[in-house]
Amino acid sequence: MDGILNISKPQGKTSFSAVVTVRRLTGERRVGHAGTLDPEATGVLPICLGQGTRVTEFLMDTTKVYRGQIELGRATDTYDASGQTTQRGDPSGISQEQFKSALASFRGLTQQIPPMYSAVKHQGKRLYELARAGIQVERKSRPAKIDRLELIDWRPPLVTIEVVCGKGTYIRSLAHDLGQILGCGANLKSLARLRHGPFDIKDAISLTQLENACRRNYWHHYVYPIDIVLLDWAAIIVSDAREQLIRNGNPVVLKGAVTGRENGYPPTPQVAGSNSKDHCRAYTLDGLFLGVLRFNPKRGQWQPKKVFL
Image (tube, one colour):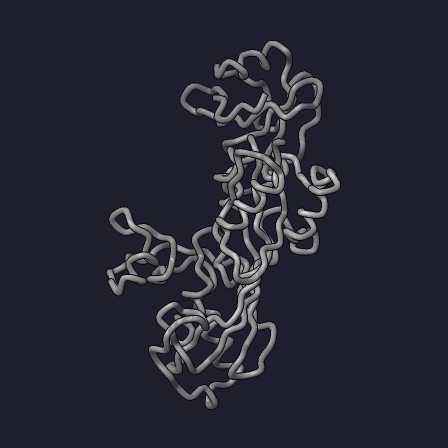
């Protein structure tokens, strides 16, 4: 089975253990997730099957939506509620306007320092492995892009925010940094991922639902096609001759490929995005998803990047 499952990860389960569960239930050998979700976090966890694992790099680049509850007045070493307290402060004097003003400073392109308790590697070891061993290391800041950051609920010391962001954004770091700006300390009390690329929490299934579906042999109805991840790219239908060239890994010249036309077939409208300008989806005359092509401007050719047939 090739495709992607939209799994609703429960609290207390790691992303890796969710993958192990899906592998056991479905019997599929090639299974992987498209971006770690903290064990205590809940929500959308896309799990790729078969050739679906080959589009994880594109899925990880897509926009994510989170809803997080922040506790003001307490900072921790893990930046979330499970950690040891490192700072306490009185948040009673912080107004809603002050909090919103602090939020505004994080919108757009910003720099974040990953938490020590994260999967980022330092000299071949995960930071959380070093942290558990009592080792603190200096971490370099990383770019993060936050498209939208809004206050959803104001009940201090608990406040709820919604974040629309790109890959590599740590909501725990955001909560911690907010506490530092406000001067009272803060931690991320709870987190839910509401959306990851095309996958929404409203359509996600629990591991229990998947288990029931596997038991009754209809679980494949929950599997999304691979190309759902790439629907904001231009699409093109190629001739039989060009299909064979692409299958063999050879570059091709596509007339009107920028607009997605060949042989008079209408394209899927191109939508601006990080990958849509130099990548496109290729389909056979029978409508099968053939692969991903990348444009080489120096040669004026489209080079097969990933072929699925």
